[in-house]
Length: 274
Ligand code: NAP
Image (cartoon, rainbow, N blue to C red):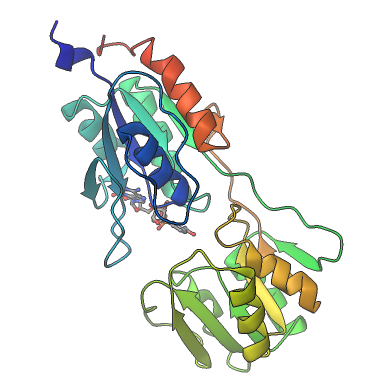
């Protein structure tokens, strides 16, 4: 058996800070400026491919190999995994990328390749927070008129149509790329890529006279300062709960924990790859 036949090939389903940091650690690449250094990888060089959905026009590509675009459902992902001799699958997509996480679970079941879901912990309210929880963007849209009229909507540009009927509400939306219609009529778009500092967020809330913030429970530190700024200013926050995760998938809450899992998994190759 050749060395190449047993070399691990990790496919990271990406689109998050954690996915990038995992790719940096596994390829021994220097970290992204302004972020903590990547933790040490398990011994032994792995081939690392990160897959991106292709939603962002000019993504910041992680180190290692990259591929962009959908696979065509669980069967398409399973075919890709087999064709490229992927030995380990890490679903490091955003906690709200629900479909892709189910596709990953389906592909793992079809191929027998071990799957880890890397999911940063969600946020929890602290004393002084005024949070209202809801299960969906539609739920947030239904609650909004009772909470405020100048909204900082931080749920991403993809679900804006859900708020399009709120014609009396003014929205500030911050996103990497311009949102597409349909969108609420009273809308200002701020093109920016995180992370954002507490000072940025304080200034933004004050300058736009924001009286309610809407967020997904994304977790992580890159976008958390908006929550602190809202707490300080006594502004209510509408929090969209995370969607359900596929059952029976191993989970890691940090890049370090994912590296630990990979270290153990390298030692026991899945069927057909040993
Ligand atoms: P989604 O609804 O779960 O996925 C929709 C379809 O997009 C999937 O069925 C898959 O197409 C394709 N896809 C998603 N992630 C992919 C990946 N990493 N590589 C290749 N194909 C992918 O996903 P979404 O919520 O639109 O999110 C898209 C991407 O943006 C994800 O990579 C996610 O990490 C990132 N992101 C999402 C959010 C959010 O709030 N949802 C926030 C920040 C970043 P096929 O079925 O054809 O394979």
